[in-house]
Every structure is written in structure tokens, then in C-alpha cells.
Length: 311
Image (cartoon, rainbow, N blue to C red; front, side):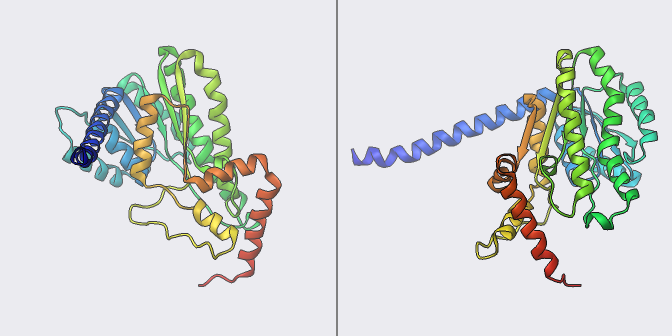
């Protein structure tokens, strides 16, 4: 009896490992079938997340349209994709110069894509511009630039491609947003405002196009960190606001977000919030206990202003 009990644990672990492997393989094949032969437009494809989304969707057999404002970096991405993918199972990506902060060029880009493929099945609005500083020190021109890149640019491209999806009664639009679409963080007024606006637009649009079987999805991570930067360990000895913001700014890796975008497309999810428990709790605190939330944030700002920054 004792020998059987000892053998059961390894067998159980082996069985669980086998089931996880099967699940991963089925999930991978399901993901590929969900985007195979689909026309997928990715904005700011030369960013860290954009590159990972391009890799995931290219491997899945999508017909990619990679948009970016630097032609040389687009070509480098193109070379990286075709050098590792099986040409018999993938399509050659199409490269398009696009700067979403220049709204006037967006309709021409949309026409170019539709003339080339005749349709767009999936649009991934990934482009984003950040700025940090006190509100009174950020110029109105910079406020407008941030709003153009993060709000007017994505909705202009969406409006240009949406009629095609509605007429075909199929399609999916994915907005890669940010936690600051849920609540604002000090010294990021312009950025938070643009993310609030974008989230509001796509939440409204979701209801409007549901009858046409067009899916609107939002994926909101905290922050997307660079490939080689990892967060430091938290310190409970620091003040509560320091611990709060340290946890809040722990971003997710671009690979994780790209894989979540693929899952969102495959499962046609409407909203995904990628964050560790601290930011998730902050969303609920902001909703149900706003006065406490504002007090914690204000306390942090006061302490920061009283401590001179090095350099």
C-alpha cells in the first residue's frame, strides 16, 4: 500500500503535465486557425509590442499589414519575420508608412490596404505616445500631439476601415490601451486623458456594431516594459504610496501582451485587464472609495515634490 502511494504522486504529476501539454498544443493550433489567411493590420509594428504581435500573427498564417513611421525599422522587422517563418505556411507582410499623429494621411493608408486586400479582418490599434510632467509645464501643443497620436489617430483609422467590416458583417478591432484608461496617475495628465478618451470611444462603439457581428476588444496592461528590464522587489518598509506606485508601475513583458492579444482575438473577448493584484485593487478602490484613493495619490505627490530628484 505504501509503495502504491509513493508511485501515485509521480503518475499524477505526469498525467497533469500531459494534460497541460495537450491543452497548450490545442490552444496553439486553435490560435493559428483563428487568424490563418486573415488580413491583420498592426499599427506601430516597430515597437516592442508591435514586433511581438507581428511575430505571433505571422506564425499563425495571417496576412499582415505592418504600419510604422520608420521605413528602415519596418524593413528590419520584415527581414526578421521572413527569416524564421516557413514560407509555405506564411504570407509575405505588407509594409506601410503610417504616423498616427498625422491624421491627414490615415484615410490614404486605409484606402491602400483595402485596395490591396479588399478587406481587413482584424485591426490592432497599438500605437501610443507617452509624456510625463506636471500639467502646468506641458504645453497645449504637446497635449494636442498626444491626443492626436493616442486618440484621434486610432479612431480615424478605425472609422476608415469600419464600413468594410460592417458591410461584410465580420471583423474585430483590438485597442491596446493602458491602466490609465481606468484611472489617472499624477504627472501624466495628457497621456491619461487620451487613454480615457480612447477607452470611452471603443466602449460606445462596441454596442453600436454588435448587431453587425463586429467585435470590439480592449486589452489594458499596466505598463509594457522593455525586453531586459525587470521590476525590483517591493519594500513594505517604504510608505504606502511608494509601495502602491512601485507595484502599479510593474509592467508586463511584450511577449505576454502579444500572446494575450492573440487569445483575445481567438476567443473574441470584449475586455481584458492585465495587471497584478495591486493595480486591480486600485481600480476597485478608485470606483468604490474615491476619497481614500485620491488621498493616497495626493500624499504621494506631496512627498515626491518635497524630495529633490538627483541630476
